[in-house]
Length: 372
Image 1 (tube, rainbow, N blue to C red):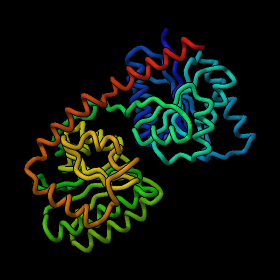
Image 2: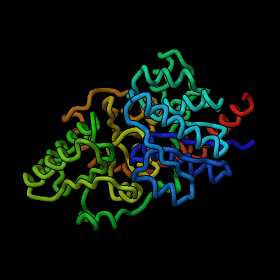
Image 3: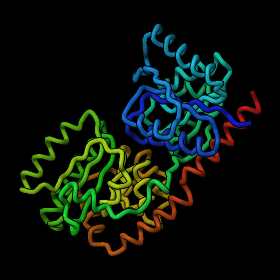
Image 4: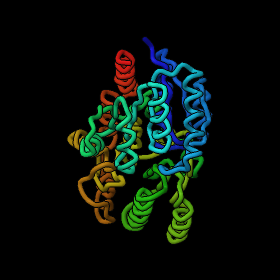
């Protein structure tokens, strides 16, 4: 029996969780599984529409605590979608919209799957949703440990990457767009410019400024992402460019052509899904995340990097200016970047493809239907 899956998330923003949901939706549809998405509209909606995946706009709150009248209204809207479309599985990914999905699950006796994408969820809200879920899903080992601490079991299903979409390229068009010479050494960072990740972006710009002044005169840095601290980073970048009298820091804001952006870089500084995408594009990755510092990801530490979700959910040490400076200096001088990049792509294709992720997910969806 094929499930009819309603994927629920807060908003179709550009981000790791949202990109993951989009990848699941596309792969499920490719396999003949009926799949729909309910969320606030956002920048990723055109990509969803490109694949003719039905979308229902529901004005979910972005806060865990909402007015009871609004909560009732949102439950009614989501329940109406589920009944109209014959939904047999609900799959939520974030706590505000997930709490609405949980209420609909209870009302209509539809199994709820909830994927926990990080360690940032409010513990109370997370526990309430897991308590009503058929299955909790962890995207990493540290997340699975967190769910265990809360007293719940979960299945480990990593983020899946479409290795046909994220593949090696030459990146010259992006370099030309930004007037970056072919001979330049380019460092790319991609993340939300918010909370601790904004601090990581600022740290990277400081280190790249030091490195350009002292060792790598042809260095350029590209920063992809947006968030509530973007303007602050923009002001800081202008100061750094003025100090060096060169446009070497390039803020790209929101982008939906990440494969092309990765292709323009020599090395990517990132975490979580960004690390997996960049590695699928055969790019070496220096992993730094919200939790802290991991360092250069290479074959001998692939398993360790994954166990920490590339610094986002666990880490080796604090992220410091001196540590990142040393690592980037060594990377620039390394003659092994192409070798590391090729091994990285092979590992991601073997262990983290969207096909593998969806095979496991669809199997779990079907199991839930057998026990209804």
